[in-house]
Amino acid sequence: MNDSDLISLLSTSFTKQLMWYRELSDLVHKTLGQLVLSRGDVTQVMENFTRKQKILDMIVEERDHISGSVDLWQKCKKGIKDGQASDELDDLLKKTAAVISEFLDGEAQLKRYLEHVKNPKGGRGDTKP
Image (cartoon, rainbow, N blue to C red; front, side, top):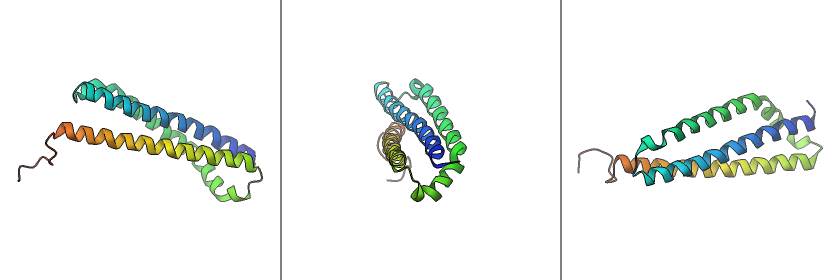
């Protein structure tokens, strides 16, 4: 595989993953909003959790599909002659990392909310003072 084909393959794949992570981030925020409005009724958002798992499965499948190409990229990226395409791929990877971070922050907020709903007094559920 030549340099431009490798960059093209990776750019296409990471563009898809970026789109999916954005969708996940939006879904987490939507889920949190629905939970707050329903006062913690998880049955109101089960469809969101199912959709989230499907998106995560697609991401894992895509990552598995391109893992060899990512390894090849890591080995040869310093010697890539097409600097602009390489820079664009690096920019795409930075955007993807930022969206992943946003998604994980949303997940942490959702987890804290669900823990609060499960145990509203903030304790760990034990009966010891």
